[in-house]
Image 1 (cartoon, rainbow, N blue to C red):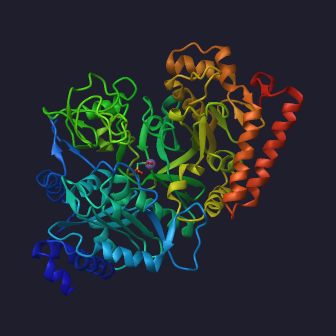
Image 2: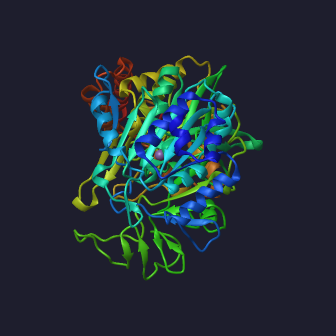
Image 3: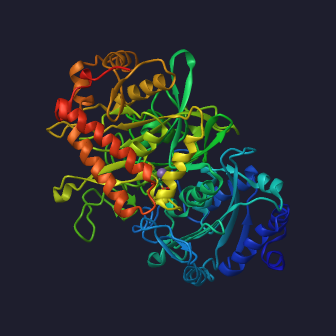
Length: 622
Ligand code: SPV
Ligand code: MN
């Protein structure tokens, strides 16, 4: 403790010592000594400490105040606008293997590099020590976590996104595990990380610690977000629960009934927009912990805020976020355009593009190009807003319930132009986990090259964050639901089907109807049609829902366009997925191949009888 006593002033030392946890003290002392900050600020849960961090971010220039009261803007470096997958590695002891899909380095070598990068990295800077609780407080779900960072922007973001945990640490005392994060933005030039070549993120699941260095972008630095998620996936695997890249939302059914659903979608597949649909309520938009409690499966939002993509937010499609972004309140925006009157602009915002401003590329005017002659947009496509969910009118009252919410349905949302129908229910848990979650793909269009959509395999939308081998993760999911009497129903959605001319065949707001249909299904209030790949909605039910939910006349023609079974495309998908698991996932559970094989057989049998494209009207109701 001599280091802490020597390096912390009295008030900060007392705050830290009020937490009687030797492992915590040792951890902090080790990195104070190595990183060598000028001063250390220990944050309690008190409003004064929280406010001090925000004010410091403004004072140090990491954030600038905007015209709307409470709003600030932060810029990450031009080359530091997204998660750095390549330099994110697990530290692995020699005898451990995570398989070919997960980046790792030898732990001993990694630690040598970490020590050399961190040595004196905080010289002249302030180190913030923060305590949080992942999941609700006083709950079986609660996970304690401590963050060390020399970035007031990162510290401020965390205060918006996570529940304060100083008091919880005090209660914890010397017992119990906690996650640890060490972050340094490294040397700053013009307010942004200079040594991007030395940007490194190392995850050590043995020690529950993550190191993040020479970067500022939130996905690389906000310890409690995707860095903690990787630690939690490993923890959940050891303890037989699940950590998922999922929203949690309440779907509002008839007579005031609310049924809770979770949903996993790869990026740009409609995850946040689904969780924010009008008429429903949001518990969380990104990360869920899911546990068995008695006969039920329950979920919580790990976070209490949103770090969302700002591009395309407008008053018509996203009225609730739009309202928050245009009202006073504590919000950080990043990597969008700042004008001289402290206003901001992002791509596809309502209103006119300003004639000039500053963005992540420096001084900006419309038409500005980069070194390769490519146009630089007003805002980066991964530019973000950060806010606490309490700023949103549709926040669900269960956010902080220590018991979480009962999960009645799980949605896996893919993006393809020609295969999956807009909504479909799996036959059972195993069928859903395998043919929907583990078979999730999202299609990109390589427009510049004129190529067709490239489908990216992304099981449970969680591939980038897995800290255990893919096959083991699928196996854990299968086992999790198998032991439950009434597991949640599993659905797939696809908002991106196109016709032969390449036009979308659904409206953006049709997803409201799919949600209401799923809500009725999990409560066993309506029937369905049995297809080889799952249960499909009946025309009459959708027609009624389109009328009540959207006041739209839904024609049988539209229904047939959307729900006709595309057998050749579904067979091709099965072949693709089987091939990926055969060649890239050595520990695939055998039941995955068996389940996909059965589905293939059912599709082929129907094809032999009815041809390639089968109308749902010809299939049996059940
Ligand atoms: C995502 O990319 O899935 C996000 C943003 O939620 S990040 O924090 O970068 O992961
Ligand atoms: Mn995410």
